[in-house]
Image 1: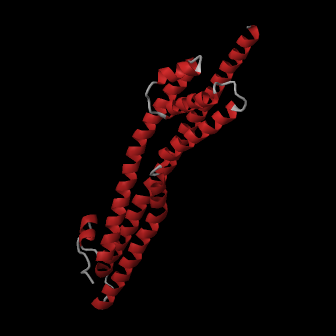
Image 2: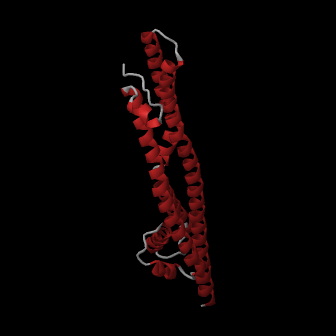
Length: 229
């Protein structure tokens, strides 16, 4: 068994910790780093996606026809642009927007595009949930192992002096603290990102509704034009 640490600073306890406890601490530190990395990456991604979705909504609000909004979105690769191109392709395959069942087919296409976008946005959040759920128990394992080593040290020293007991207990509790340091931010970040993904999904739902309204109005105008002719 490694000698009980005399330095009770966090670094001193880590350096002098048992190999198992040290491995637990390193794993928890890496888990915490992963959680913050996911937060940074997903925050940047979601901010960009929300900005593009709002721009696409403005485009649909001001658009008069499907052909117009398709031309204005150009080669954009954001989700709303993908929705517009998917609807335009369905219109081309159906020979226009007057075909019976066109709106139902468009709805299915829009649902698929929206679901794929939300799945992409949620990539990485599962890791946060896992860290939040598992890290405290990993820290607890390190604590149990450290306390066990502390008791072994006490028995070998044939004393219950606090100076002998305290370092091992402190080392064990440091593992629990690191588990909480990894888990608490991971849970908070997971909930935060889940709310932002929900807001993004709502924007995509609004875009789908706007597209359906757009093609509905265009189809109505075409029917009125034919009657007038």
